[in-house]
Image (cartoon, rainbow, N blue to C red; front, top):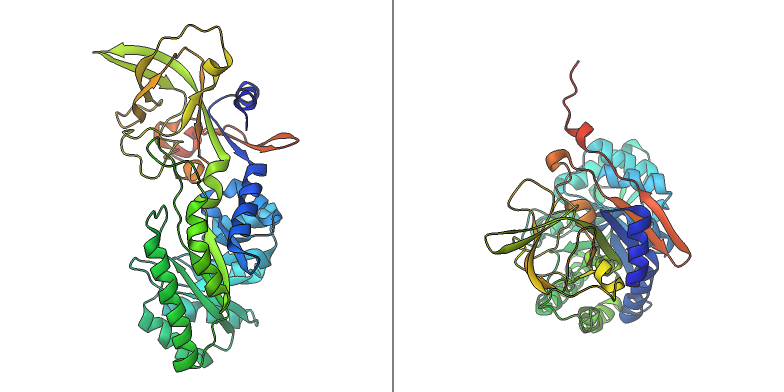
Length: 395
């Protein structure tokens, strides 16, 4: 999006507002799909940005859904059930039964207990469901290798399950690709072992590499698709053996989002210039940010649009509206000029900011969400007052 268009959106919809460029999201998915090749599927982890779930589905991608609430969003948006990978470390019987009733494409099992739970729910529904066994990667997620092998060896005991493959995901914003390449080799070895020693042919691998994106001024923005290009040969090689789906959220969506916030106060205290914004850390989060010490990509849209403005370069501390010293978006950054009502645009906010913020703190208003298309914009969510959520429900 051009800066002038963002400023127009801020004037029309107000601030604070998230703007998600759906066209840019689709273009990025196309580029990543081209890099990995036609034999590799993509799966969007909708927890990164549920407002893009419909756009991802419209583009033909699978969606990883991790909670009953996310499944409800898919139902409300009208996402095809066969595009859904129903995941999550906490699955209750009602959740599984609802997913089965919706006929989701595949469920993941994160433990032997979840395997048995899904079998019981499928039996009650008198149906058979596809299941991916999630392999543990050193956290609370997934089952151990020994448990996975046990389930495979006992697969005849689960007549209502069609165990189609493996799910593997370690984490997000992982910058050292040597780890992903080592994982892919390990998974390739496991797939071979399952076929040779256990008589089980893996049909499908759902792999989340957690590729990193640039956020801060010391990051390399020259080619934010480079991690995908470096990993692509190993992915394509594995796709010759098994159907591979690459599951990501941040890497797909981060670059399509912009957060718009307005200057509401300017002051100097003991030699430090403070700029108070109408947003804050209750909305804006960047992975790797520590008390505002890093400088995320952002611009002053108002100053850029005003060629006649007198320049007055100063170092500023950009703060939000919360009554906590932690609400610092940028601890120290130079701006040519800042004035009241200026609109700042923070880039690369398409993933997690809209869902990870501490929205209920101080009962501040939640920001608007705008979806941008080449033909115009649409309001996806209006301002929401959170005070009612923090008010005791007394009788």
